[in-house]
Length: 208
Image 1: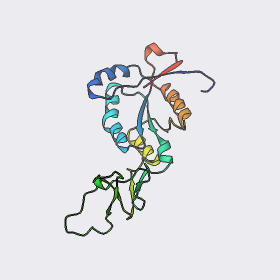
Image 2 (image 1 turned 30 degrees about the vertical axis):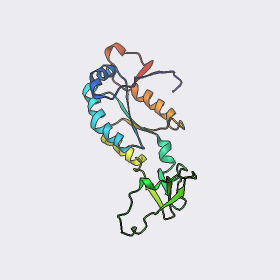
Image 3 (image 1 turned 135 degrees about the vertical axis):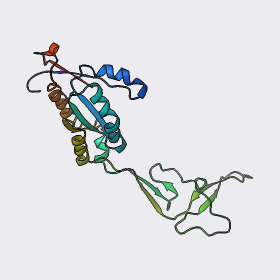
Image 4 (image 1 turned 45 degrees about the vertical axis):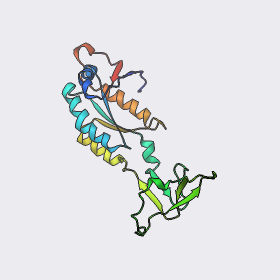
């Protein structure tokens, strides 16, 4: 970057509470923190705010912070949809028959509710066998949307709330944003106030 070569040493840490003291040791002399969350899991962004930011500020105040949004390829592909097509008796996602045994049977003597599915029996093909596998008869199509993704705007707003020095979105699958992430790590790692033993030396960054 800028015609110079840098060495990035990356350190990942265990997130369990019992390892907090070991994590604190790895924070010493760290040049920049990469605080990551998944855009496919909004709860991970909330955890970054509630758990990780206070810990970093406690053990290494003043160290530059880059908020990193991961798995943007999942967001770019659109919302995940689980589709169940009862008209064919097959789960479109898996291609497997939908077994009526997984559904609660209607109460005895009562008519099925509007839009409810009716089980249809099919013989197992074995002579003398009373066992039947049941598939769902034609009725409807069911769509199930997964929780919404964290948008770019929401990530940028979160970076402001967390007082991050930079916000970067990336995907390890498509490698989108990876080059920018490396550049941000170097750029903000070099901005960290140099301790006395590092004066005059900007040859490497330690990234967590």
